Length: 114
Length: 114
Image (cartoon, rainbow over all chains, first blue to last red; front, side):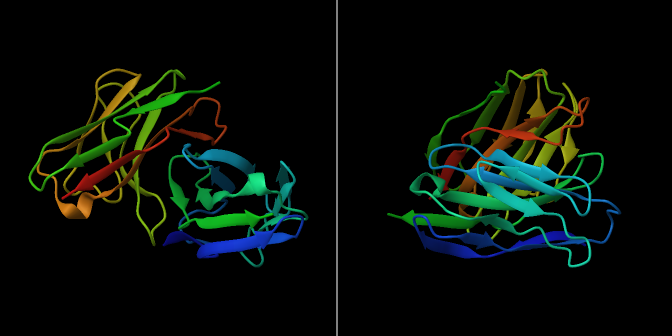
């Protein structure tokens, strides 16, 4: 089926250190999936962090980057230097080309310690 | 700025109770969604709608009804609540016409069924 697997549970990183949250996807019924990272800050709803719809392309926002790798079916989220304000839950997601169906990972809770 | 508002934000009920979760969007979006978020699971789609009077079944619809009364309002109904429905519920909307692929989420409604 179509699904997303990401780094599970909680990740703790010291401020100014680098971050990577792994995300791999399976898109058996979707020929050209769109890939997303959403973020949920405490007390808020999910909001789009970045999206990439073309294999080989990189998306970036707020210092975060993710590259759509079709060969490894991966879309890892990276940041070179995290800040305390980045503490949130991050969700990897995919959709079909027409944005009709979305599939979300389980979420990764990031805590950045000063 | 797109806006999705959910109410109530917190609800406690007993087994067998009747619960209605409300969602209103002021984005003029056609698509609206209800998801549930549980520990160890990604967001799971309960029901969605692409316009007033329309209802589509999602991936985990059992025990839930939904109704889209207007373009703005989408309700999730639990007529005989069970403890297994204790969860964090998110409503979202999206604009299919622009094909941006962005879901706009509400802040979530935490439901506890005792």
